[in-house]
Image 1 (cartoon, rainbow, N blue to C red):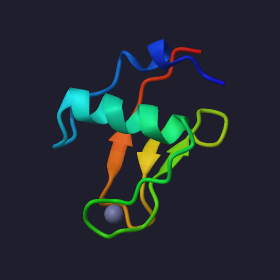
Image 2: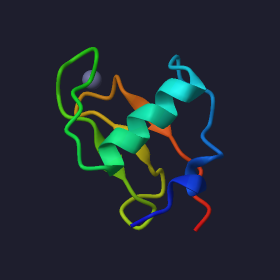
Image 3: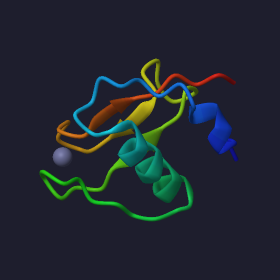
Image 4: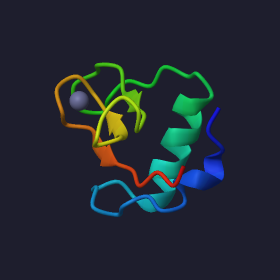
Length: 71
Ligand SMILES: [Zn+2]
């Protein structure tokens, strides 16, 4: 499991506030199923080993939170 401290460098490019993003990440990493605010599809955590652009993404792309992982 990735330690939550490794998400301290979250990019602030999203419309969501930094604290909202951190709260969302914590919920998803805890195994909660969180639907996208816009389209209702499940938001997925993409890890660095899965993609070159890790972050949180919904199926339709309206939730797009890029993360800087420091592994
Ligand atoms: Zn969406």
